[in-house]
Amino acid sequence: MKAGITLENAIEKIREYVSARQDILARPLYAAVKTFGCQMNAHDSEKLEAMLIQMGYNLISDEREADLALINTCCVRENAENKLYGYLGLLKGVKTRNPEMKIAVCGCMTQRNTAADTIIRNCKHVNIVFGTFNLHRFPELLLSAFESDTPIVDIWKEPDETDLAATEHRHFAKKASVNVMYGCDNFCSYCIVPYVRGRERSRPVNDILEEIKLLSACGAVEIMLLGQNVNSYGRSGRYTGGGPVSDNQTDFAGLLNRICEIDGIERIRFMTSHPRDLSDDLIETIRIQPKVCKHVHLPVQSGSSRVLNLMNRRYNRESYLELAERLKERIPGAALTTDIIVGFPGETEADFEDTLDLAERVRYAGVFTFIYSRRSGTPAAAMGEQPDAAVAARRFNRLLSIVNPIIYEENQKHIGKVLTVLAEKVSASDRSLLTGRADNNALVHFAADPACSGQFVRVKITGCKTFYLTGEKV
Ligand code: SAH
Ligand code: SF4
Ligand code: F3S
Image 1 (cartoon, helix red, strand yellow):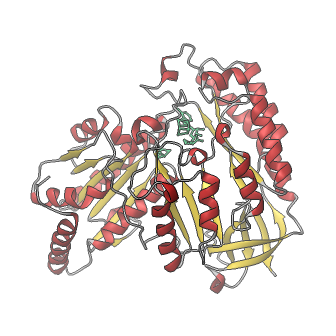
Image 2: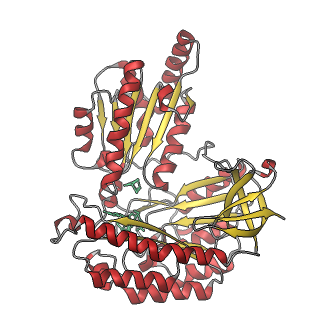
Image 3: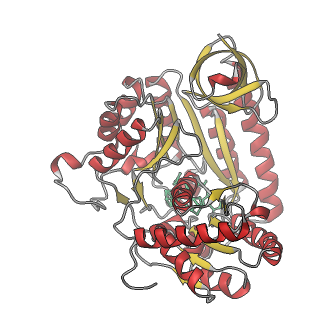
């Protein structure tokens, strides 16, 4: 990177380059952003897309037409990493037809040991690789890539103190994601996230509130607060910004209460909650604040205390069941969803039965199920008894056969009720339907005028499948 080039400078220079290329080609210049992984990554991609728009690019979804492709990677499981190589293979053909094309790779996978160098070495068509700690430097890196053919690798070991400004660009204008914290300090034994996203850092309260006020002013009505473990918000004591600590520091329940005061914001969601840190104050806040959605994503990972201990989750089966019970009792109608891993090293048939039993007791409204994936560098990778793939696959299918019918039964309980749905868009599978989410996060397809898109709509639920409800506007 060149000394003395500021972000604004870099953006301006690329705008000039883009404009000149557009004149030569007599068409706009297109950029495609491909995102793998979680909502954290999806939100980072929104920020990167906003920069691309600022730099004069037109965003498209079809990478075959792109003059610039940016891939935001995930490495939480091995198949997420394989997806990157599959996608880079596809882009190789595109670049052969358009040699001026630039290809950039960023995100969690690039932060792993030598992954960035491996990508550059094996994929000669990649121009830039950068990491999760220096997103804001993307324009400068792109400028360098325009000025030289040498591939650029820029991976930082520590996060920068820079927060990217709130962006008006969102995948759906009415909903906005906001980071409340970055990184993770939990070090669950199977998980790579703390190694690629760094230590836990909470953002100052006032920065978050200012960002949400701005988002509200430009049309957002629903806010999703993002953190790997939002329940420990404010505890890390390592704030990324300055400002007086007294009114700039609170816990997560306090933060929610402050956000509820912001005009124009109608719904507040958050993820993810770690079961160990979910306080009674937070349960009370969810219960009494009408704007806070009655949905808690509470990943359990396993129903066996022995496996939870090996996973370093720092709660056990009993305390989780007690917490789930408390949530359901105190917040009537609350929907609980979860993540479950099967095939963790050493998981026995009896451990797995404990997981099935727990899922039957809690009766989740939604479950994300994963087969354990060995991530080198994590403590679990060094544990003996790596599970047999066939056993893990069988357990995975058995788990689905238990949780899916329960989800269906839970969905049936909504039939006849009227739910408020934030209508997002026309349904992809049936153009006569709109699709959106209820307060409890249930996906709803319903008959209504497409003009209702972006509005809160009262919907009478008339039917359901395992993964969605159906209904009509009342
Ligand atoms: N911070 C969140 C989870 C982030 S990762 C939390 O603690 O709940 C999302 C999910 O991926 C995890 O909940 C876990 O179920 C799954 N996961 C993480 N590492 C995994 C691995 N090595 N193999 C399989 N699943 C994994
Ligand atoms: Fe990974 Fe555990 Fe942190 Fe979640 S809480 S990101 S599973 S280490
Ligand atoms: Fe998310 Fe994958 Fe990174 S799950 S934090 S994008 S490793």
